[in-house]
Image (cartoon, one colour):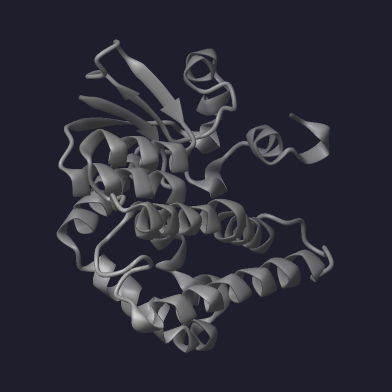
Length: 235
């Protein structure tokens, strides 16, 4: 049994997807980010960096094993199951390199774009939004070119690279605009195929259960938002 602590974020979505795709037994527990639960002591013992997702593998041979950071969790679950990472040396590192594209570029750029688009104070210059949108668009165009002659990012089989990137790409029209999203034809085709995959449908439905149990951003207390976003010097 694996315990998953999470929220409605894209980084949590990919752990749900991996668990469903691998058919691993798990139970999910909500961490109410916009109520500040990540700052409570009990969660700090799971992850001192106070971010979701976190898993606790209750079936580890050496006893309960706690792991945070979603990319590390994906690698752990794949190696535990012997799936979602190709065995060949070249294909294995091709998978890891595209996983790192998410970690170093797609996630940070899209995350900052969403933040400045939704939560930035009124009257802030447009530079942050323009920069993060431009950088997100650039790396998505790289992905689009990669997918032009491939079903998935590494070849004909789903890998943790696809699972890591999909949650950040499935709502591109919302974040970039419909025209910009439609221009990414290969990314759109890839997203459509993944969206119809039974394991991903189950995963997103399971994540919705957590989302429904959590505080909505618009209902969060200002002091929680200040601490969450590091505003006014609050850490």
